[in-house]
Length: 333
Image 1: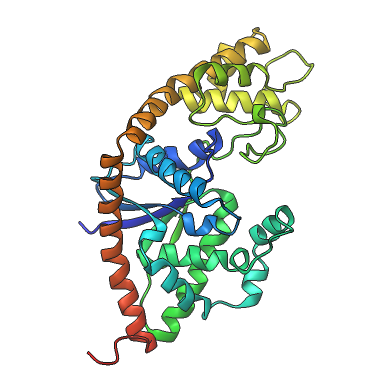
Image 2: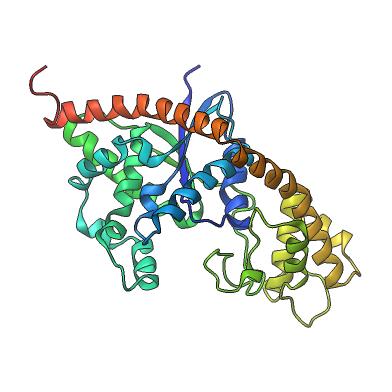
């Protein structure tokens, strides 16, 4: 049976929220099936579009790798590596830049959003970010790319670039498909449930970090914004309650209808505590495993080196083919 490749990555931002976990990391572990091989990277090259303190940046990169392992990435079934450890990402990105049009990049909504947030640092990397992401995907001939709805546009431009390259130089790249989970794709802020949960929110009570201690998680849920209707219902007029019900449903496996039956006649406080307890039950072993892995640097280094070796073996083959087809290959074999 020929395996289909999967590629995804996460930036070493320092804080991985409950939204990141539900929308991405939780599903990455589930994608490790017998008919797939997964390439998961800590996307530190992408993170350089924002100014970084080198020492902090290096430590956050290591912490992100440890967290991925703690969330269920199995190095026997996947290649886990740091993006910058495989130089082919940067090399293919340049080649693909030359097959990407300015108009395509101008239409990318993430460039507009990030430019607004970082008006003092609108660099070329922000603009060509989607091309590096395309290189990430196409290097590994990925059939599937697990993404949230807000990242679907990046897979679409990767498809356009691949199709254009294949037309110019012959079949070279697999055309990737976005893999968007049907359940649990969007967790909202605990303080403003009309907005997506985000680590960049200045109010730390608005988000749950995967590594938060149980008492911190409980306090944040108890402070969650609700409303004055004093009834537990799932509708757009009660976004705070709807968010809590969604989180409870995701972490208990119960449907929204079942949750509504359980909390019928109860107060908001009971819903908040029950939701917090469900989240704590799942995140506690992850936090403990994360701390254990982070303390075992020999093991972590071994996993990342082996992951980089596996990734480089595939990336090198793809880049060699690209160079041969574009006239960039060896001149004196």
